Image 1 (cartoon, rainbow, N blue to C red):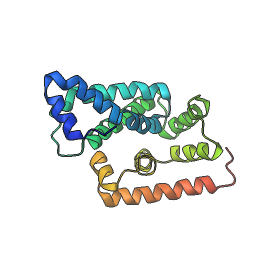
Image 2: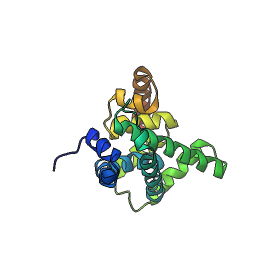
Image 3: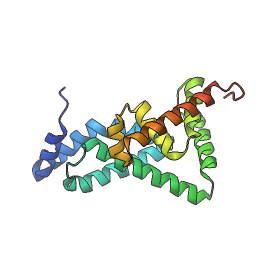
Image 4: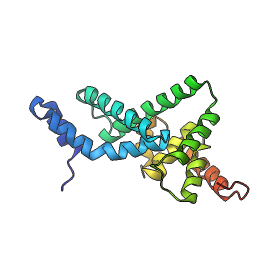
Length: 186
């Protein structure tokens, strides 16, 4: 099946009679990518599903205002990233816990979830990622898992390409140190 271009989706969305069909095409094209992007940030499947729904409700409400000054998927990623960060900040405030404790709680949830089926090395990688500061973790996930170009990540996060490269490099070094550290055995 041929992948529908974003311009076609946007043109269809602009017409009332084809709006629902256009949105279904958009969901089909981006829902899985966005699900995994959010999931790597919040880790919990149920929270991810809730956030995914919120993201696409926002996309539905605002797609007619999309100005084409960025790619459609980077615009959706930006919404998903912002919603995820807002969720994590609310979770941190609700529990009145520091971010490192929230990361520890997320790691515990990762192990407990029936949706995680990775091996020990994958689990160690996920725990290593959780030790990163929030922005480094987001950048690492987008570059490593989503295979996004630095220019695309720059559009999503509003950060310079140079700063992104530096953050990714630092994050990769921290993860490498965490994984190769023999004292930590998960």
